[in-house]
Amino acid sequence: MGKNTDRSFVLRGDICYSTSPTHLDARRDAHVVCVDGVSQGVFDTLPEKYRGLPLVDCTGKLVTPGLNDIHLHAPQYTFRGIAMDLELLDWLNTYTFPEEGKYRELAYASTAYDIFVDDLRRSATTRAVIFATLHVPATELLMDKLEKTGLKTYVGKVNMDRNSPDFLCEDSAAASLDATRAWIEKTKGAYRNTLPILTPRFTPTCSDELMKGLGDLVGEYGLPVQSHLSENLSEIDWVKGLCPWSTCYGQTYKHFGLLGGSTKTVMAHCVYSTDEEIALMKQAGTYIAHCPQSNMFLSSGIAPIKRYLDEGLNVGLGTDVAGGANLSMFRAISDAVGVSKLRWRCVDQSFAPLTIQEAFYLATLGGGSFFGKVGSFAEGYEFDALVLDDSGIRSVRELDIAQRIERFAYLSSEGGTITQKYVAGVRVL
Ligand code: GUN
Ligand code: FE
Image (cartoon, rainbow, N blue to C red; front, side, top):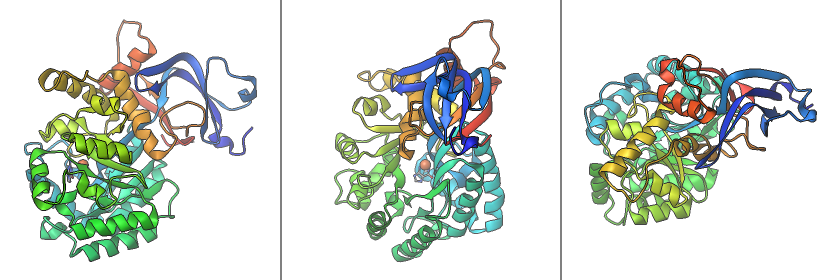
C-alpha cells in the first residue's frame, strides 16, 4: 500500500490532538495512520485496509502532533538564559545587536548554528519560523544546516537599514534590497524543507524606502513575511515618532503590503495592539506569535490572547529565543496559561484565562496552519508527530490522557522524554 513505504505506517499509542481551540480528542491504545506523509485519521480499531502497513508500537506512550514555534531568533541562542535584566530597546542595543554582529564571521556562525540546530532537532518543535541575521552567507549556512534535520522551517535574512549600530546596519535601503533579492534567488527553490521568508526586523530599524521595496518583493515572489509588532511601550512611542503619518503601529506594515493578505504574515507579540490594529490584522489574516516567556523576561507585558482567539484571529506560540530563555514549546504552553491568569487577575477580567486545551491548540493547530494543513491528526493533515514517554514523571495517580499531556507541559523537564519525532511522515528523531 502506498508508493513511499517509509512514509506510510501506523503508530499505536495514547493519541491526543486538538479538534478545536477548546477540545482535545484523546484515545487510549488507538492508531494514527500515515500514508505518504499524510494522516488518514485516528482509529480505535485499525481498519482492514491499513493492516498491511508497518506498525510502530508505542503502547503506553503519548502520541501528539508536533509543536510549531512560529517566532524565534537563531543567532540569539548563544545568549539564552543570560542578559535578562533590561527592557526591549536597551536589551537590543546592549546584548542582541553586538551578538548578531558576530555572524559576519562564518566560522562563528557555523559553530553557533550547529548548537542551535542540534538542540532544535532534539526539541519538541517540528516546524519553526526563524529570524537569522542580516548577513546573507550566515543565513544560507543556517538554512543548509536546518535542511539536514528534516524539520520544516521558514528562515529570514533580516532587513535593517536605520537606527542600528554601524556593525549591524545595511548601507542603504537599496543595498538591503539587493542583498535580499540575491538571497531569495539563491534559496527559494534550493531546499525541500527550508524556505525563505521576508524579515523586516521591526519598523524602528527599517526605513520607509526599505519597507516599500520589501512590499514589492512580496508581490514579485509571493513570499511570506515575519516581523515584530506592538511588543513594548517605548517601542510603540518610537514608531509614532518615526512614522507620524501612521494611525497605529500595524499600519506601518500594512501601508507597504507587509501585514498579510496576499501572503501569510506573522507578527510577534501584539501585546498592546489597539482596536484599530486588531481590526487590520483580522482583515489581513495576520498570524500573531504569542511569546509569553519573552514578554515576561523583557518586562514587555501580557498579550490579550483570549481576546484574539475569541475574535477569530490566527494565533500561535513562539519561544522568541533569546527573549525567551529556551526552545521548549512545552514551556511555551504552560507559560501561555500562566501569564493569561496574571492578565486576568491583574489587568482585565473581561477575558478568561487560557485553558490548557487552548494553549495546546495554539502550539499545534494554531501555529501549524501557517504551514498549511499542519497541527492535527485529522484526515488530510501532514503527519507531524511526537512520541512522548512520560513514565519518568513519577506519580501513584492514574491519569487520563489529557491530564498526562497537561502534566508534560508543566513537568517535561522532570523526566519526560521525546522518543520519536516525525515531520510530514519522515522520522527526524
Ligand atoms: N524587536 C526587534 N528585534 C527584536 C528581537 O530580536 N527580539 C525581540 N523580542 N523583539 C525585537
Ligand atoms: Fe523576536
